[in-house]
Length: 193
Image (cartoon, rainbow, N blue to C red; front, side, top):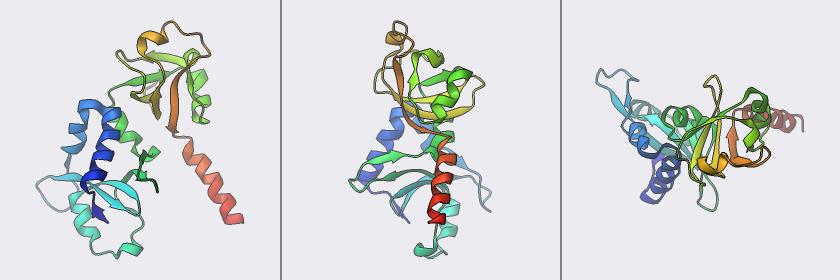
């Protein structure tokens, strides 16, 4: 486990900025009340086995007692670096993104299941959408009861969404909470083999 270098930090912050905008400052400056210290610490980003973790300083200090090969995870895994050096956000960062999201989309109850099966969001499934979304912006998807369901990339702007037919794609799927169940099935198949 080590701190991110400059290139890695830039890649992580660019991806987070796509979803949070200026609220990225809230993520970086968030005080941590974990650990025995009475004064609040800070959260930081750490790299371990190509995965980036969002973790409190006090937990990082305590994790130094664990050998690197035996350390499975620490804090919240927000994403991973591919072999090509690209950074991809994972579904575990959804709570972090939802609390600081700049652009939001709410789905009708009838289209929630479709999204949770890794399908894109269609115009017919939109319940509400925030203003000033441009194509390519990061979007956090919520149910109508404000439960975060996942995140994706806007395919159309807010203005264009008003003129689209119901079967047009509005948000491109990136991750959803249904991944937990899909990954569980994959893990069970691997165990059986």
